[in-house]
Amino acid sequence: MKNGNLFATLRDAFPADLKAIAVETDNGLNYSWQDIDRATAMLANLLESLNLPSGARIAVQVEKSVEAMLLYLATLRAGYVFLPLNTAYQSAEIDYFIGNAEPAVVVCSSKNFGWVSKIAFNAGTQNVFTLDDDRTGSLVQRAAHCSDQHTVAVRQADDLAAILYTSGTTGRSKGAMLTHGNMLSNALVLKDYWGWRTREQGGDVLIHALPIFHVHGLFVALHGALINGSKMIWCAKFDPKFVVSKMPEATIFMGVPTLYVRLLSEPGLDKHVVRNMRLFVAGSAPLLIETFNQWQQTTGHTILERYGMSETTMLTSNPYDLSQGERRGGTVGFALPGVQVRVQGDDGKALGTNEIGGIEVKGPNVFKAYWRMPEKSAEEFTEDGFFKTGDIGKIDQSGYITIVGRSKDLIISGGYNVYPAEIEGYINELPGVAESALVGVPHPDFGEVGVAVVIAKPNALLKADTIVAALKSTLANFKIPKQCFVLPELPRNTMGKVQKNLLREQYKSLFT
Image (tube, rainbow, N blue to C red; front, top):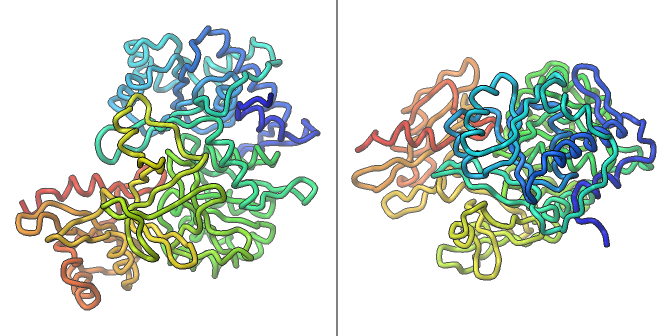
């Protein structure tokens, strides 16, 4: 019987020539496929030597490095559960995650060892290792003494492979439990849907410029390259000049919208430098239509937007193959093959074309449940097995899906529904506006009202009252923000998403 361990399938996809380069780093190092095979074997043997219980969690908060990627693969290889943690998390957050997940192993940067190890040991974790982005740390020192031969642990498709904590914009973060089968099904679908080229077709080369504590960089980008046996150009930190310099050697780039904005400011970006590129993918946050259009004009390429989340990996995508339809800016494309997506009203009934409601999804990519939250897990699934994403959107007559906002971002003002993404779209089209965010805050008369925070383009002079006046000539009165602020920047998390929870907190007392 075939081994359901995701690593077994990734390993089977390695090219026949194991001495070929698998990863080329931004500081001039090369790792062969054989290096990946041997290093993951040594790390897997180290983990197994610790006599960990079945299903043990390996919590990892380290800077991006090839060794951090190898640790992830070794965790899969040994049959344990990988728990990536955002490098921005501080002590109170780490205390919660370690207390909640009870990992058997914690791996952190040397500079954080003092406080992380204290939290881990207090929570009962037996093993704490260090790993730094310069190939040093107690983890690699210990693994160096282990055998480079290892038999991949046998796992079923339904066995747990990873726990990803959601960003927790409201309440405590929830640990989404993803199985080997969830991630493998998604990797195989995207390999086909995005037209990954085999070595016989010339092969693909991925510029990997994303963090690896998140679905986009850890699963979508990494699994995509590995399951196709494709070389990666590895960027420990995003450097637009370096990325542009490497584009002639590459064919695929995946990024969050802020990376595309920064690349567009790079003088070397033009149609010639991207001549060998075939695919640019954007996700993790909404891509402004202005960025979408500017990228098209500058490079001649149309960015492919897709939609996913920690609980589902990828669930929709604009088409790669243009015979299946155009790539439409402002939409996240169609439901992926094998994935069902629907829009439901508050009453749980299916909505028609272009009607706005809650997005629900079902498919082999959808997570098992939330870690140790049976009631929350039951709450988030419908009776017929669809997961309620918490996103609000609509599906047009051609099947294109558009995200309008998060359900928790919905503003109910005087009994009317106000969708922030709609208002932001109008504000972003105004002259001199770079970006905007609309949040709901308490109001004694209307229950809730919108407050707009607007960022100006360089050298543009924006006035809050002018913005509000422009909206009044365009939108219904209940949609008009009651206050508008022009600020130098918006608060963001490491994936570039605007942290609206912080804005809501900042302005919650404006009218009360």
